[in-house]
Amino acid sequence: MSLLRKYRKAVLICLMIISFSMVISTVVYAKEVFINVNNLNVRSGPGLDYDVIGQVHEDESYQALSEQGDWTEIQLENGPGWVTNEYTTFDETQEDTSSKDQEALEQTDTQTITVLYDDTNIRSGPSTSYDIVGSTNRGEIFDVIQLKDDWYEIQSEDQQAFIAKWLVDPGSHQFTQIENNSLTNKKIIIDAGHGGVDAGAIGSSGNYEKHYTTVTAEKLASYLDMLGAEVIQTRPTDYYMSLSGRASVANAAVADAFISLHYNSTPEIPTASGVNTYYYAEHDQQLARNIQAELIKTTSARDRGTHQENYQVLRENRRPAVLIELGFISNETEENHIQSTVYQQKLAKGIISGLNKYFRE
Ligand SMILES: [Zn+2]
Image (cartoon, rainbow, N blue to C red; front, top):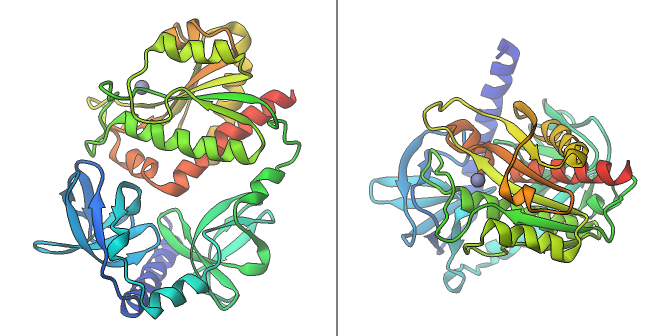
């Protein structure tokens, strides 16, 4: 990391601390947070850059102190800590409906925004006089934290940043206008790997592969739906399904593509990372190549390439079929990325972009 980047990071962290304290002081909470997974990391601040200071577990509940982006501050026995909202639910009946909360809701009339132009700057504060902390491109979607002086505060990777309101479209509908959308009316089978008693691999956090494949399948399904594709999920909820059963869903539906989603794990090599895509039939190599290439573009993950492999779910598939290993959950850093909403969006967009290219060719 260069000195300039270090400096920028330091400035950003200072700004983040200032903005956190502002948020905390203006929003009153009386909510309870329920934890939905085991071994969920509790961090010292609202982001993956912060230290892990403990863990919480499924079916436990805590008082919420404040919220920041996709993170909630909870009260633990030995003090406050932060958990990601991905694996928690709020007790809605106890939600505070004070005027302050209402105000916060009205300030932000949208949950997500889509960037309209390539090379759009994002800044450390809500005006052009603030430092540029990064840049983004047309079609990128961000979760919105708040609207401030015609600038959206957005969740960008592990940092908060601002983007001008006039450079974005509210919502994620821009996604339906991707150039040469060839996905309309395509029948896509999304196969979330594992499920039920078959938990798949276990991540460094203790979370199961089947959980992550379900999260990605949901995201992918919602984006494909926006693009006019007909989506069928082999297992829309968490239950066991045989490999033959999964392949037969694609065969019976005469699907245009079958996408099996998996996450990798090699606890003996905790630094292993990256994405790879498998195919079985020779004629599915192009589908695998397109998806692999686009996934690497959107995620910047390590490119582990495409490989021909005799996997049952591919072998028994008579439709164009690939199996993607979307990253290593045994690698703590990569698993942290995989746990974030922004990274899940990148995975879904990469797969969609690859499918779009495949159908166009
Ligand atoms: Zn798997």
